[in-house]
Image (tube, rainbow, N blue to C red; front, side):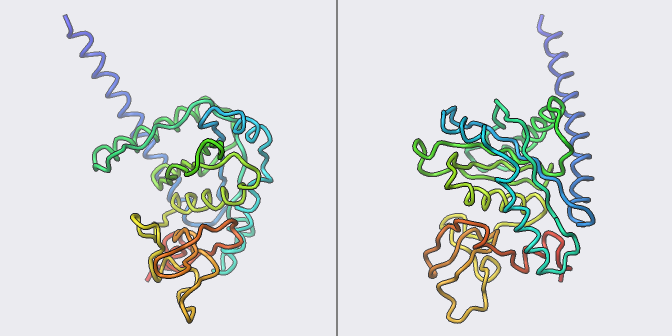
Length: 264
């Protein structure tokens, strides 16, 4: 009695795996192109009202490309310090708002659950791209906006190199736009190969690669944050969150990982 259902279920699994193989192959080619820095990378930001609040609705309605110009300026400024010839390494555009959210990451960090979630996320992105009429994008950033009056601390954001996908949690407040851009820039860096340089338990940047000024003497307090270190070290146990990309730099190890400097 259940054989037809089982056959159909297996067929669906085979089709899904086939699609994931296609998506994975395309992602590999895109990832290879993204780290040669021969052409500007196009970043498309998809706004999402994460908490269905009026504040997020209003914020998203007023979002324009200019809100993310600081990200473009940051990549241009930092790229120049490493001799990058591109005048605009990254170009950011805003997509039409989405009314669905990406799959949530697993609560536990098991290898299988993380891999399965990654596949589901990449498939979800693939379906979004097929439905949306948007310009070509190398990197897709899904920005989930929250009303700061309802939420004190943002959920963890992430960036995947496989698929060049960023899932960013941000606040829907004008005065927090600059700090939102810091998070987006951090996750974009992950999509092109940068690894975290902070302690996941304490959030403290790891010396020396997570420091913007590792040779500073005395070492503390630092005045800037390394983009993947995430915070500005005040002392060995405390660090502050940068309010703007003007307080952020790209360290040498991150530059190596993303292809701005040759590896050692």
